[in-house]
Amino acid sequence: MEKKLKMPGKTTLAVFLGGAYFVLAGGLAFAGSHPNAAVRQGKALFQQKCAGCHNKQPGDTNPFGPPNLHGIFQHKVVTPAEAHHIIRHGKGSMPPFGSLSDSQIDHLLAYLKTQ
Image (cartoon, rainbow, N blue to C red; front, side):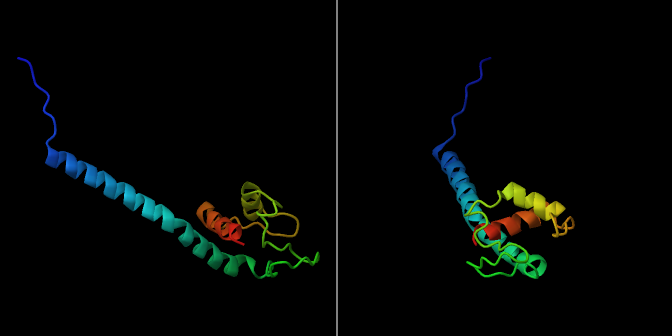
């Protein structure tokens, strides 16, 4: 006995394609809004954990005190990976922030990328 393959009907195909579109469109919408949420969370973390020392304004080139973090990635002072390592482990007089999760550090980096 030979089985014949049954082709999906137009309704089945339409439901499948509609569902795939919904999933993809929803995923893209989420991906588009996610960075903004990360930046907002990073800004809040920056205000809580970093601004006490790194509170310089954009363009402040005063060499005294902690470095100005505005434009740190645009001017290629450090890479995001180097910044992640410095935040996690500290450097010089900057203490380590080992209590921050990788996700929190990523949010901080997302915020700093906008500065």
